[in-house]
Length: 347
Image 1 (tube, helix red, strand yellow):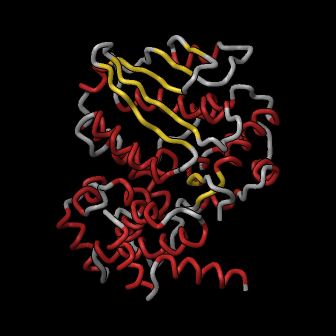
Image 2: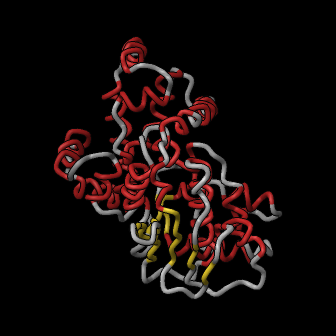
């Protein structure tokens, strides 16, 4: 379970251990030294302390003598489902930039409560500005802040491309480091330090970019990831079942977990998917229901996330259908199940 009031999804740190090891340190030791369990990263639905995540990056930067760790790590995050998650999935489905941004912001609301993303449009100035507001209890987190902004910068370049993928301006709340060479290389725009708010602005014409063709280019990344994951699963799971169950945890909260969207990513028609699943004695709805049941049990036990947010994470429109499903799975309401699971753990 997370400690304190703020949490983040552990998958946000998924590629960090490889980065730490590459630069000469033992990742498990660094995680342990700030009070984090590195093994939680194996579960894409686990949650960890947001303040300790911030502490981890600052601690790693000092240990590895990498003052620009946040920026360097952003460049080494692999483009696969386990690291860039719903962003890749949604980029494959959203018709335009504003739809993609709105859906990602919706996802971030349940990804973490340690920070909040928003954006504003200034048509007169011709710009769109993305904002990040951190929880008041968040410790100093220069590395995490710069990592997030670099990920946004790289994401805009990868998903949207020129001519408007270069930021107009970046504002950061922390003080300027001694060497700004990498900052200027990464962002390529004026940078204001000691700002009142962390934000980055783009030319508003970036919203005119259509996403459909760009998204189709990302399908191979999903398929490579799914093939890799299939090798780790029990032998009794067929490729189609493992592909669907692998993808499901990442897409439930996106609002696009319907069979049409998922089959599109897996390069087959909904009819073919249902036929293949039927041959294996199951169907799409049953698989999605099973994954939801498993995630519910983990979330109620491992995290202090609200029932409302867990329902959103699983793709439910409200807590009512989620509560009904929980009673069907476990004969208990979500609150009753959480209490029961934690009581069993204490005894």
